[in-house]
Image (cartoon, rainbow, N blue to C red; front, side, top):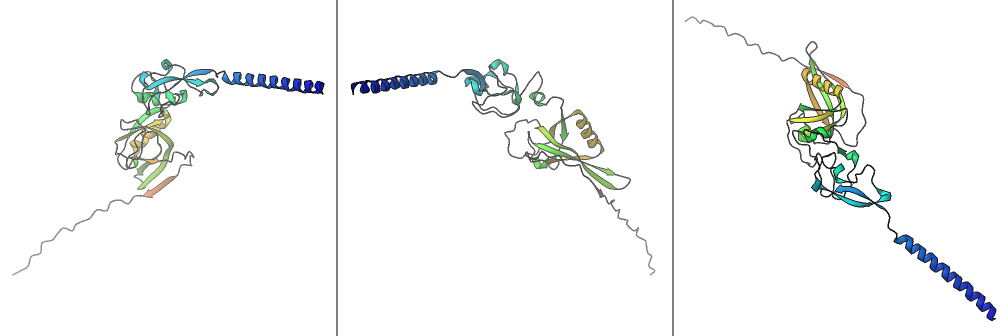
Length: 244
């Protein structure tokens, strides 16, 4: 009986020691902190199209296994770049949402590679009653008259064109319509040539796109016959002599 008790006690003691060792190992493993990496984040809310300054950003310790792709590790890598999106406090600054600014206006830093910025004159009709804002996408229609056939030809020239600025405003924070005099578009060089030619030959019209509508449709051409203005001919009054 004593021998059986000693064996059971020894086994229980061995299991207790093993359990204590496993628990201690688990606690130590949990106590070791994950390695962190320095990540540059926004210190304040930063609007679109702004050249970053030192006071607008800060560096946070970020878990090494979840560092955002394209992030920066020091302020020096970010200061002077131009934002291509809005940033909120503590949001990581990433390379895809920033643009280099070598010199000149901040607008030049927002233009994508191989693209150009061109401004077109608009009014309350061409500018969609002022509802076009920076960051919107538009289609561009062209209308010109054929004097030989008295027809007005309208066709879609370009589709899904990015609006860089309205007048001299590049901020995307505005949400109320405002009548503007010019809209700056982001175009490829060959597209810019098409727009300039269309403005010389006739008139252009902008149409606002839904931001989720990325489908390009086949350009349609419509022709409307223009009725020439009818001139009203007046009869020359004749002088009638009545004898007395």
